[in-house]
Length: 115
Image (cartoon, rainbow, N blue to C red; front, side, top):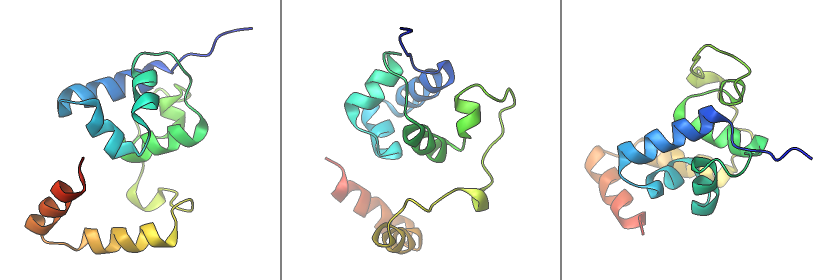
């Protein structure tokens, strides 16, 4: 049986963003994936599920097809076409509040929420 590995574009994208942000935790927060999951993808140990690919794609503006290498072009997801059907009403309401916060209050909230 062929062992499944992380798609190269996923590994590269997550690693570059972890290095740029200075930690894997930044990628964890941005994608909503667990620390173990993100490190597994960065190390190329496991193949992401379709749901994980959607979360990574939404976090970094990539399509699932691009992450899987199905498409060669680096096509960003148009903001109006991102599938948000999996997001609960509570999270959508929370996002609406956060989206409208002044920058300083958003920074204070982020500081409060970070471990």
